[in-house]
Every structure is written in C-alpha cells, then in structure tokens.
Length: 224
Image (cartoon, rainbow, N blue to C red):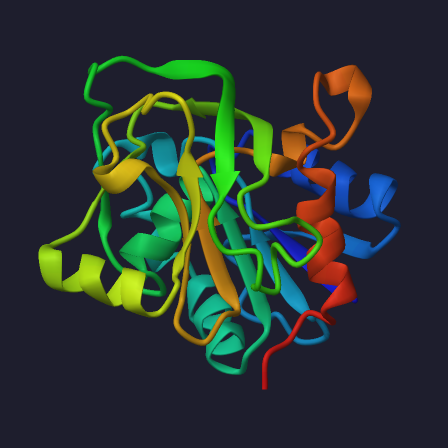
C-alpha cells in the first residue's frame, strides 16, 4: 500500500504521520503538497494535525478548498481509506466526508495531554486489531475538538455503528456523548481528534496507536 500524507500550510503532524506509517509499519508513504491536483498511484490518504492555513477562518474551512481535496474526495468515493486526525478530522468534516462539526473546547482553552479512549467499534477497517471496549492511552492536542451534531445525525451514527472512539473517564472538550472519533457509513473514512500516530513507540509514552495503523494495512486499504 502507498499512502499520501497531505501537507497544508500550517501542518505540524505530517512528519509524525509519515514516521508512523513508513518507519514503524514499513508501508510506502510520500508527502503530497495541498496544491497538487492528482493522487494517482496512491492507495490511501492521511490528513495530519496542525493549523492548516492558520485556522484563520474556521479550523479546516480553508484547507477544504485546497486543490488536493477534490482528489481526496474522489479516492474516498472510490472506497480508498482516508484518515484524518485532529485538524485532519476538522478538514474531513468541512469537506462533508463525515457528518457533524467541531466547536471550541468547552473550557475555551487549548488542551495537550494523554487521554484515555474506549474502542466502541472494533469491527472497522481501522480498529480490527483492537478489542471492543479496549482502553487506549492516546495524546490529544487541540483547541476545537468539541464534537457536535444534531439529534437526527446522532441517531444515524448510533444506528450504523459509526461512533468508533469515545473519551473514557473524562470528557476533555465537551464533545457530545464523549465522541472522539467517527467513521462514514461505507467504512473507509475515519476522523478522530486524538493522535494515534503519536503513540506508536514506547519512548513516546504509549504504543496504543500502533494497532490502529496495523488495522489499516491488514485490511488492504480499500472498501469496494
């Protein structure tokens, strides 16, 4: 599998993502600038965290209109795996590849710390190496991670098992129903606020994100 790590002006977790997928997992990966107009030859897309375009309008709102996003949307529609963490999650929501929005943290403060997560759905292409109910220790670092959606959308998320991760023990940002990560109905696009790419080696403080990327590779990178 060959992954495109998309780099926007202001991205700061692109190297973490590249390191996790290529150096730790041994998969093929390349940095791709957001002004590129083709993702031909790639099997999956990784949208990293950071502050794309300085978050000047709304987190992910400007990045959503970058040249590369039409290709990201095309690959998503073709069933290729697309993963966005933190700012990448915000971009996926702005692009309507996932439902809902992300609001300012309830505390109105930027939060950076390790956070306990629960694996709610272990039957996805991104979580198949985990057990349902497994508790993970994964870093978070965001100012706008407060997930919200209307009641109709929430019912749909629950009915289709699209809630993949929830915060465990405490809710750091006020997210509705403790939601930390969701997947699309087709099962090939996942977004989450926590950073599994920052938890793939013991020296980083946790290896709990390793099985996330192993799941992607073991499931082939595409949903037909």
